[in-house]
Length: 307
Ligand code: NAP
Image 1 (cartoon, rainbow, N blue to C red):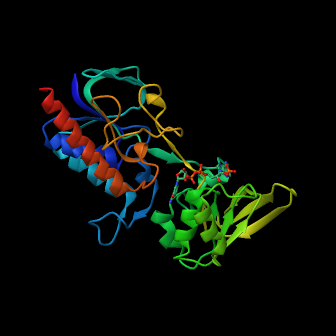
Image 2: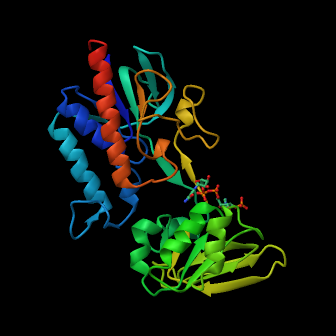
Image 3: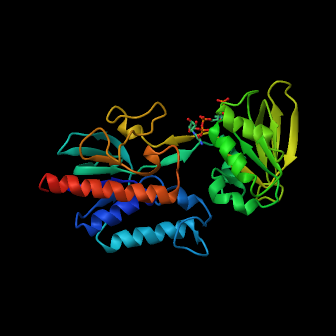
């Protein structure tokens, strides 16, 4: 039986691996669908402490991976398909059909931003289409940009982006925001944000073939189509935690985020770290911090049980 199995290899999973490896717990990391996590799909990361000139997301994850490996972390390619948690012996079934047994499990499977699903949008992710204003806003200084969504995230992203540009179009599919009134009011009061109500994005345009140049929009009430020129498209239509494999096994909120108290889930020996249990902060550094917390919790638990 494994002492520690870590599910996911983003900042939360790899920090948990570093700490448990240094505690001689010989952790096994199951990489997941996207080894390295969401940061591998971003470009430059300027807000991870320790890198004065910033660092490319994939490079940062590569460094974290090697650092954890240096102390004995083992990696296995695969994804978890289902779990059977039972204190003392947790079972994890992988998509390969293999079943692992572990005394502790650290879930760091992350979350994924929701996208519209348009072919043009998918093609331009990282080349003008992004889901993270905190990560990418500074690249669009004084440029025309658009934000899609009507919830608190869309408000927060649009307001954050006013630091960089005064030309923001907020596109929402209905005639009222879902966001809290205070956030919505701030947006409506901003002279840097124009709202396009009852409007959906039909296509992301890239006349230069490799970066966003505009959007094709449709008014859902009149059917009227229009185009706007933009350089950046910020999707803010919500996130989905990657928790399907733990359905019926753990306490989760209505959206599917794992409920955790200092990374401890409701099942003894099962911990959750990073975006899978955090709908609020969602930063690499907060994910890494909670990965450290989960590792320390797992270490203490194993010690108390005499492993
Ligand atoms: P959300 O509340 O679920 O809002 C998603 C928004 O995207 C909705 O306005 C929705 O439109 C729109 N949308 C969803 N799918 C779409 C699609 N396919 N096409 C076009 N529009 C689409 O998600 P969120 O804004 O990420 O917030 C998630 C949770 O975190 C919420 O509880 C929120 O309050 C909280 N949060 C809080 C703060 C804060 O307090 N500072 C900041 C961020 C998030 P409809 O309205 O028409 O459904």
